[in-house]
Each structure stands twice: as C-alpha cells, then as structure tokens.
Length: 372
Image (tube, rainbow, N blue to C red):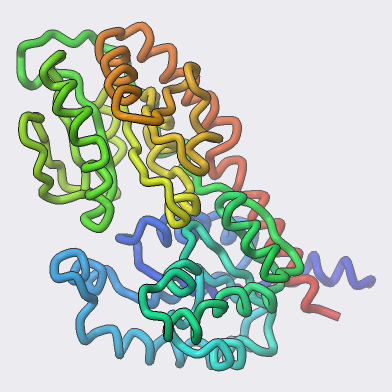
C-alpha cells in the first residue's frame, strides 16, 4: 500500500484550542460550528476552551474575567502537554495570550499547528498604550505565525499581517453562517403607528461592542424625527440614545435568527482604525442570511460584503446613514429586493456549506504533511 493510501485510511485526531466557549462569537463561528464537518469526515476532534462562558459573562458584567482565569490557564497548560497525541493542533488566535512566545512555541513543538484569526488581536500588543508591552510582546503573534504550518485568516488585512510575519502558508476563510439555521425574512407590510408594527432597525453584538452604536447616535436621532422606527439591540445591553425608540433583546444562540428576522434593516457602524480593519463583517452576514438589506460603515471588509446599491448601502458620514436608512425604511419593495440579493450573496460565498469542505481539506493537508 502506498503512502497516499495510508493517509486516506488514517483517522486523524485534531486538538482544537478555542479562546471562548459557545458564548464567544469568534469561537462559536470560527471553530465550534465546523466540528460536525470534521466529525462527518471521520476526523476525531477534541476541543478545549481557555475562557469559559462564566468567565466571559463576568467580563461583560464587571469588566474582568475574575479569579477563574488562573485555573483556565492551568487547564490549557495541561492540555498542551498532551499535544503529541494528536496529528494537528488548531488554535483560535493564540494558545496562551500574554505569555512569553518562547514558552508557547515550546509547548507546541513536535506537532503541526494551525492558527485562526478573525480579529486583529496582534494590535492588542503592538498598539498597546504601554511601551514596555509593545517592546516585549509587539511581535509576539508574528513569531507564532511564522512557525505555524498554516494561518487561516478571516480577511485580507489579517492575511497580509501573517504573510508579512513570514507565515509559510496563508489562506483566507471568511466568517460565515450555516444556511440550515438561517431562513430569509418573509416580506410583510408595516402599518405605523402601531408600536409593535413599527419597522425595526437591528444591531446584534455584545456588551463590549455596543458602543459602536454611538457612532450613529446623531443620524438615528435625526431619523427618528422623520420616520417612526424601532432600534432593536440584540445582546448589547443598555445603551443611551435619547429620542430613539430602543428595544433591548437578550441574545441566545437558539433565538438570534428569529430576533434578526423580525426586523427590516441591519446596521454595522464601525470606526476606521487598524482594529476595525481586522473585523470580518459577521453581523452583515447574519443580516443578509435572514434576507435583510444592510447599512454599514465603509470600513475594511464591509466594503467587500456590501455591494453598494445592490444588497445594501455603505455610509461614509452622518448624512449617508440618514439617507440610506430613510430610503430603506420608506420603501418595502427596495428592502425586499436588496434582502434577496444579500441572501443570494451569502449562499454563494458566506456559508459553511461552501467553507466547511474547504476548511476540512486544508487541515487534512496539514495533518498529512506531518506523516512520513
């Protein structure tokens, strides 16, 4: 039997090191939602989370993870000591954030590892306010990427950083949805002034990102004087927007699709900084997956996901936001047409049905390279 046939018969064992549990969107979408694809491909997966859902809830509530973080790191260290039992280690961002690079590389030696990025987390180090941190850790992730068998990036900004760091193999895999969970919105008439029938503008996120809505505070306030609407904030927690009808909705994985689908327009405001250029536009993919037209800041990957005037609008300034939202809230036919275009776009490019088989193949190729 030749080597290729042996590779095909071997049942691979992958160790998946996520940063968060299911509560963390990055871990949920970049790692956990692909586990069924690997299991269906006869790949045995062992997943280990660094920061539990309870730790993340504590951070959202108190601004810090709490004492549990020490036990979290101890468990991660014990897990890394078992690495040679696996054919590949698949890591979300980094295995040991804020630890010395040499130690993490030592604990990854002897097995090929793959890094996955959906945020510009390297800027946590090289853009840190403390010059000592920048000096010690500024190139930490570059060193990690340079030694990786493969770096998987959610967009070209992240991929270019990996290439510049000397990563030998870089692939772009966007952050996507599973079409089986997302169904397009059924168009229905809106009959103001009945409060529950007001058209809804939706934003979905977390308490750590809800402040982005303040970027469109004035456009939303001006819009509220022209047309009745409701701003639905999913998962973000309290936000102060005087003059705007705000509806707070708790987030859960089981209800997020239904909560988005009950709305008419999705928004994603962003700053134009290095950190935001590393974002992967997941909110937009969720909105489009539900058949909603979108309005987004013309920043980073947003300009790739949003085809201006076709599946939504890109906004450069406050007047752009007002004009786009006013047009969409006033024209159901336009909303329906753009929403259908967005859904088609997601089905072609931004779904696990497209990216799942590709990711499985990429990681299989890395694992095979570890065999002789």
